[in-house]
Length: 257
Image 1: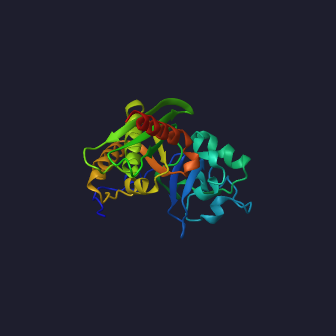
Image 2: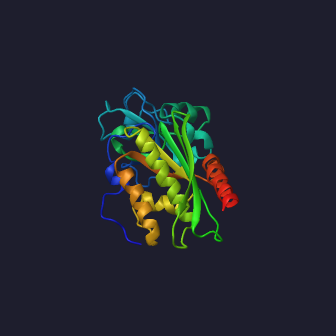
Image 3: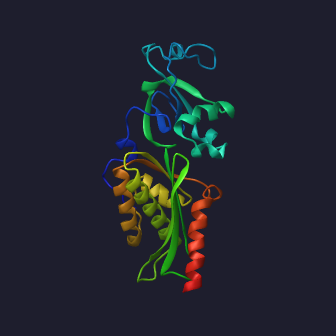
């Protein structure tokens, strides 16, 4: 597969992180995927680490008046599945109430690499069967601050016999992104789906091998390049709303054709 020359999502979003961002700790030798969960109004000299020594004691090269930042590992947050449904400002309470391990460091050590939690949340899915290769169905839902804004399903068709479930997933992703972008162009947007391959291609800026998929990929990338957004994988059992829409549309189409 070919890789485009445009900047990656990480390169585009390297800036001062906000609560709810994915972040990289540039001061860590080995860094796991982290989420910024809290920015307390304290300095690294005022905030104690787990050893009860101030964070500044472990970062002597930093100004002790620098703001402190609190992160949690994505893998540990995933042990409480509802965390992605939270608003950014609710993350810290969630971490404390669920006894999730957290880590403190100077804010300047962190670089944003994308959106982990957002006020606008999109879920998508696609349905298809090998015996119906000229059409498939998709569904997506859009939430803003926890309130349902839009829920749609539709059909993707091609004259040639090459519509796969994979393409239907792309159709759900693209239509969901475009719907959210039309309503909330200036908001942080999180897009979720259970098709890992399509998500990896879009997030890592890798063009699909199949020409029929490339137009969908291009539409997704064009939209994402203009937004503060990320696309993340979630297991099927956490994608029930979009799955129900896509599959219900599939059953309706089967009954009508």
